[in-house]
Length: 112
Image 1: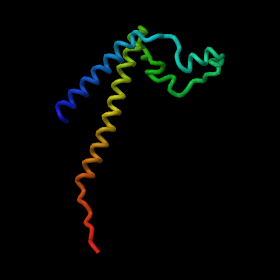
Image 2: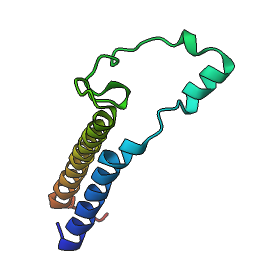
Image 3: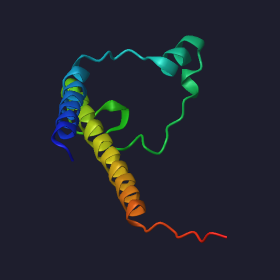
Image 4: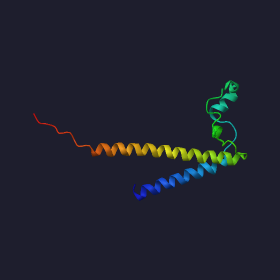
């Protein structure tokens, strides 16, 4: 990877980690989006649990961490890290396919 691309990726990752880990301390605990509409319209009580409710990072919190701000910050860092790993995996697969396609010899065409 070129040095400039590496620098941009590193800066983006650092900024994302700062936002995910530090700024999440200041996130509002008030419901937003669909949760807010559900409360306002009176159908919040019909919400059902899903299979990931018991996961270690459910609800933007880290299970087992008593401090709410720290719990949210750790969950933010984990989310950034997992997203970066997934995106890196996709980039690697695409690059390998592209380089494998470039290495294949061009088919010869016979003229009529």
